Length: 295
Picture 1 (tube, rainbow, N blue to C red):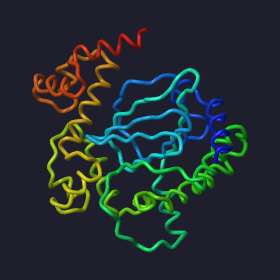
Picture 2 (picture 1 turned 60 degrees about the vertical axis):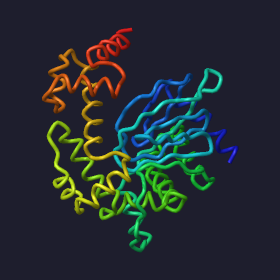
Picture 3 (picture 1 turned 30 degrees about the vertical axis):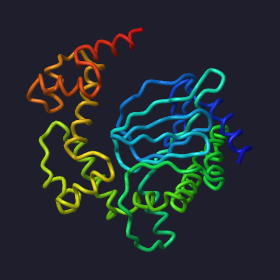
């Protein structure tokens, strides 16, 4: 495994920009950071992430997930995460990989393998595990295609399928297989999450979300909390505030206008919750970020 890790390190150094870069493989992201970073809030999508040098940290609610060389992290649903690099330097930059996990590919593998239906455990939608040689090998071969772009149309998807197969049969296999089954608890919750993200400015009723997920209200609330570590209302609030921050940074709209756009009727409530969540009032936050961009 040491030789594979060394090769992967060289490949990332050669193909990654100083910050997250999307190469010619559409589902793959390579990243390189030369210093620790401040936490950044974002909405994740299902993905595999690993680092071959340095370490990163993700926070979901009150739960902290740190992963370093020799480990991988997966998340299965759209989650409001905080992420930051905690170990990186000019001499030893953080070098990482992210690979989108496609439910349709997992479903295809489940069909081809004639996998029997299974009862999925109730669990959070994110986990860290040790990296095996069986998983590292196809990851290296996938990144290696960046040196052979003519091979990408022919080989990329088959290697991605092999990576998914290794994940499905690894330590977090039961978790990953849920992505391929539309009736799994994770995918039922995922449908409700996508509705919240698309209708973040609208009032939500638990009865409606439970109906979208195809669950009873009691079951929905329990499983939503298990997967996301948040209640549906807390989840919606985080989505609203993250979108509000993006609007403040990318435009010159006023605080009250932005608050109204993301679903707040009261400007004072919006400012209060924004400050509690981000540590700065919305008026000052937008100016700070626009100032950074101008510099």
